[in-house]
Image (cartoon, rainbow, N blue to C red; front, side, top):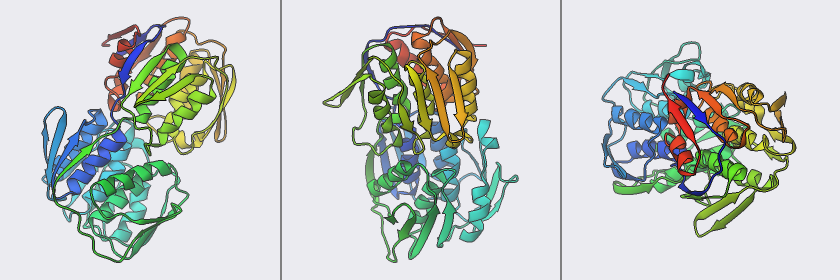
Length: 426
């Protein structure tokens, strides 16, 4: 699909999308919960749908009732030996240890850029947990056979926290006792906070956390509650970040459906909005954001690398050079986002320089209309669309349907706020 986004002034009220980080974790917890879970206000991105498909193949009964999804489970009892996680990095890294709770041989695969993303972690860790594994030199597909037996292990958290999320959920479901997961150089700590929050909400065993370096499962039995349970999915700060930037660039808008006390890492977008000089207000559950005299800012995105695309779109309109730390976290995303952002925004007349872990965006020079490609990356497509709002001409985005991975209603929401959007198939 090709999207043409025209310069537009925004106004209105919008409800933020649901969090796929929260939704996917809720799906995993619902699979592990013995009983029925009602997921209220569920997400419906491609990653969310992939998670629902995985838990169904691992034995859960999934009934979609529209404004809620009912999941009934007795734990991991696979009904298929083939699991497909779509393009979800969280999905493959979280569900693989959970699937290994079963003793059944399973093959786990994905699609798109996921097939080229490194999975050596499993080759290194799984043999220590009684799990047989065969990968394609650290790439998908994976063939595994458990059952997982919790042991004290040491893992490298420098690439992603998603592997740890899967281990924490699997260890909890296995009622791990007297074992510790030691973690070196953990990145994206807020996402682990979200995992622990979901475990707690489902009454599952949660480890004692020591400075995010030790996750200690105490030597006691834990019996998670059975029966019916409700879980409401919160708004997605990763997707909402693009709405906040759109408001800061192109007009006063209000955004509903976000938790002000969320542990999601990308809530930090509020700091950038304020530091850039845009106006931001919070009142009774509603955020209002509007343009100001935008100036360059300094931001550390090491713990929230998914914010790079909206941050770059914002920085493009800020006078001066914006400095963003954490660029080395971008190598193994849907694309190499540091290079992709440099390429895409370069075509729009915005210079980006990379100096090791630092990205510098030379803003305030004017965004030019251009023809760009999303590089099959949902966040790149959204960043280009938001950057178009005050460009000197329309921006055309190839492979614009990449947004379906996380925010299928994105172009619809832009239209609701007054953006002129033209969509057409190839």
